[in-house]
Length: 211
Image 1 (cartoon, rainbow, N blue to C red):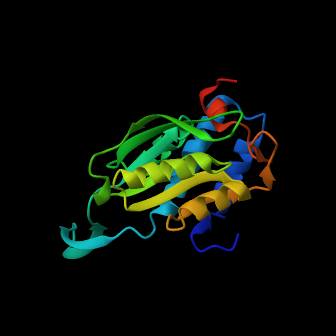
Image 2: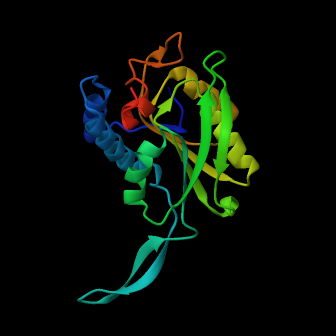
C-alpha cells in the first residue's frame, strides 16, 4: 500500500519474530513473549517523531545541554483483550505512559464492533494517544475505537498493529485519514470469517491460551 500514513516496519528482527509468532507450533508462552518483543520494536518506530527539548545535565566530565522528551507523557490505549498482549512491551519502552482500555468484541454475524468497556485518562486532549491491537482485520473495531477516542477529546492519535489485512487498512484510512498506522506486515486478505490470511490465528486466544 503506497500511503505515507502507513508504515510497515521491515526490520529483520521484527520480521524474524513475526514469522516465529505465525507458526502454529509456537507455544503460548513463546507467542506471548514474541508479541511483547515485537510491540516494543513497533513502539520504537511509532515514536520516532516525539518532540524533545534541551535540558542541562552534568556528566562525569562536563556540563552540557542534551535532548529529553518534551510535553505531557503518552497514553497507550489497548483494544481489549488482545491489545493487552502488546502493552507490556510498549510500557517497557515507555514506562511513564498512562494506559487506557477499550472493550470491543466483533459480532460473529455482522462482523461489526460492539463496545462493552471504555476507560481512559481525563486529559486525552493533551496527550499523544497510541492505540494498540495485534490484528487489523476488518478494521471496524479500530475505526470505532479511534472515533470514540476523538469524541473523548483526543486530537493526536496513532495506531499500532502486528498485522493488517488490506480491507482493514482501507476501512481505517477512510474513516481516519489523519491517524498514522505502524505495523509489522500487511497480509493477503480476509477469509469468509473475517480472519487475516495467512495471519497468525486468533491473537487473543494465542496470547491468553484460551484455545
